[in-house]
Length: 397
Image (cartoon, rainbow, N blue to C red; front, side, top):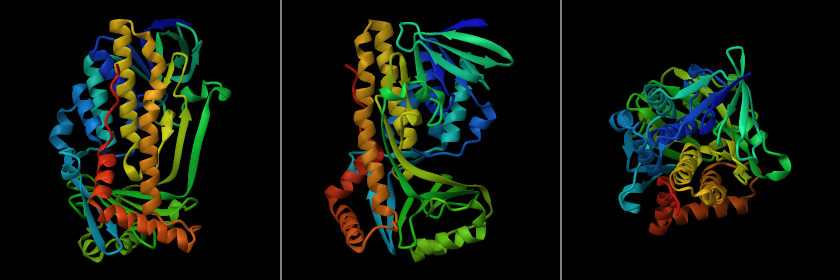
């Protein structure tokens, strides 16, 4: 068994692992990333595309924003389509100048991969059987297999950025964790198409037939979603059926403008809310989907991972530069304060805009009344905007 050494071992080469690695590398802190899949597989994942102001700023701080700043689409607002009514949420005006950036997660990942390669930092793809050890000690370590050889990786800290099904959270004793979860009775059927977006901004549509979302990746590539039952079979949805259903859920004026075309990707994603507490165990820290899942309605998944990255990076910076090991025990509490607020907003957006078959008429009227209040009140619209652009990151003192 060959022994390797690093300061921070990172499990997972998705955007959170790569972003943490880039920030630490720029600060002179050594990292090594282990990824179970191939680089091409990681880049093939189709994921979120709305970046909060905080994540945009963090990517700029990491020095990987050149292509994002050139090709990303700055959005100062979005539309809520309530049957045939369009209600505009002016993010910039309601938040004192903040906005969001539409830039696909695949592109963020590609930018980070290229920056890491240019920096000469190590990522080992197709690392098999990764197992963390001695997490409560001052010198944790991992074992893994790569290209037929077994390795031992010794480190100071381990960052678990390997997603909901990854090994990081599974390495923590079950009795050391509290799990909070809600599974929703529907999923999102999504397609990607090389067609111009139906609207210049994102459109969230509430309709008796179910929720719909009109999003985009570029001025020539669109991403659309439909609410479908959780057990729906993807094979039941031809492109033609998808486009016809989408038109029925949009206001007539938008439906008339919709440009259809063949899908280049189609999938169904289940919706759940999930939080694990605490987000650390000894010298293992959980980030992103390893610790929390949100329904995509509030565009918070990738952005919450970024705020975890920011928190751990700034703590480790003070640990290595100032010896502030006392801050390590604050990681989970700091992250969870923001996580639960984002969970609440994502749950609220999901509850307000989706159709629940089990909801009685009273509950439906209450939900509609609440949504009308938020839309018709400046204070309500300000609350939506404040949460959508992203709550501020907590300072590390």
